Image 1: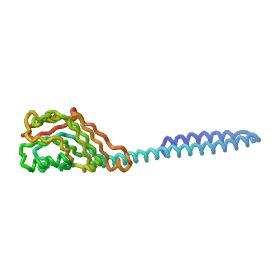
Image 2 (image 1 turned 45 degrees about the horizontal axis):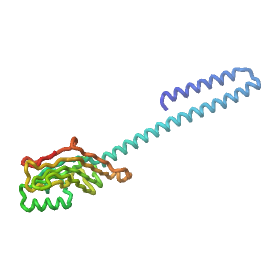
Image 3 (image 1 turned 90 degrees about the vertical axis):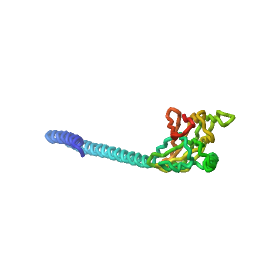
Image 4 (image 1 turned 60 degrees about the vertical axis):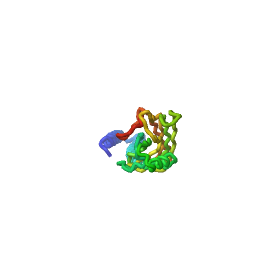
Length: 239
């Protein structure tokens, strides 16, 4: 019990003692007896009410402390399982990313298979454009869904300008790793070739979200918040 509660109790006790003393000092008449009984009952009721109030205050404080502790634990658990997905578009001459500084796992779809064939066939001048989603967070990203829209200019194609929509899904992206989605293959790149992001949408969960059945996190990527990387000898323009 803190000093404020003790002070409240002392004040009430002092008032009750003063009231009982006043009753005691009155003349011994029947009214005095009734008054004394009423005073005792009133005193007991007030003391009981005061203790009940103090217990209620204490319980509220304990409940708040438990709630704060639960919130802190929930935030700690959520942080330890939360991914941090970063999106960028890169142009490379090696679609296998063998020399990459971090673990990049390409999505093995038809576009990527064609890129590997071109690369293995001695296409040293080919350039490959990928959308790379890296996980820089503390936890793994689960059920990652990618929908990327790009405008492409290809000087080797009669239909020079085209809009490509690429979709893919990845079951899990561990921390400090990345996944790569093949966007465009330029067999004979020229300065007139280019790949420009229109918009990209990511949807992903994590183990904590999945456990509590929380909706996946959705991320929108636009040119203003978009990062690009191109090798020093790259020709295809990125935007």
